[in-house]
Image (cartoon, rainbow, N blue to C red; front, side, top):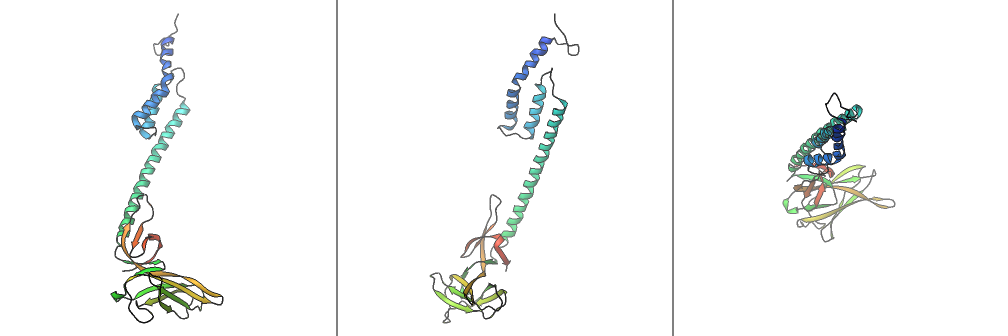
Length: 241
């Protein structure tokens, strides 16, 4: 005696035989994943194919629960939204990097003011070298000591009494004897005399941008300065001509 299902026309034995396919569901899901994605990582297409494969291989006597099915659809919708969001963010990031690259390339050949104690100076150019000292205390008497690449002091500039804030100084490229010096790298050391000794001061000096280095990983754009090496674009205080 056999029991038949009036809705499908299948005997109980046939239904049970069909339900045996569920034993291979995991293999089918894995094959679907590999076929779509080509790897162990799953994208939205692989997720959809896995969902269809799961429905095709479900147990007829114990079909997919409605609540679980709706939850899977909701997960698929969330996955679609995240994928779209990632594409949008990547597009915005690419446009931002392109904009930064264009801005940085416009700096090539121009002079920038950066926080540094070294500068490349060409006294023979006839242009005065201008720098800035950050004075910490009011009524201070800061001085700027200039040394060449060999560490020899070539000039000492007395800025007189200054108030707290930025104090500019100018160097004509000559030593203490009035002799015009050769071009090269020079170090500018600023200090202010106090009752207990002297206090080191921060200096901002000009430099010429020779080239720009773009980061492949989205990092900060680096400016390659003449005689100084590389410096981050964020450290530029002022952009000149």
